[in-house]
Length: 122
Image 1 (spheres, rainbow, N blue to C red):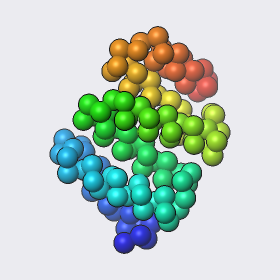
Image 2: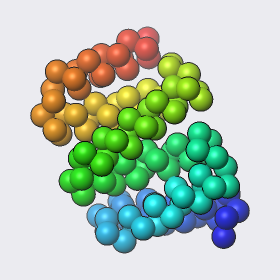
Image 3: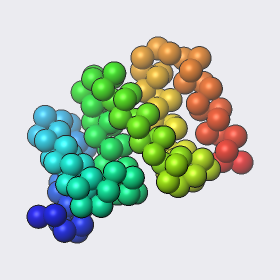
């Protein structure tokens, strides 16, 4: 069950449930995949960081904005350290965090992050 392809299959299942708005069903699968990837691949492996981001996205969609923010910030910082500040995945994390801040009506902070991501994509 810990083989990377098996974990990817579970992640795909969770993503399908997420897309169908079956959020309560997707949540334990996302959590399980994240924990197994941490154990198997390490805390800062790109796939682990992807799982961190998708779990944060689900929590955002469920309205758990503070929990989602913590995970988005963790994913962003780890992606900066692992992939670099200008890597597309890092910039994607920056955008996700900005969208969350917008949902929290923290518009000035969100604008700064959107502008930072846009500037780095030039």
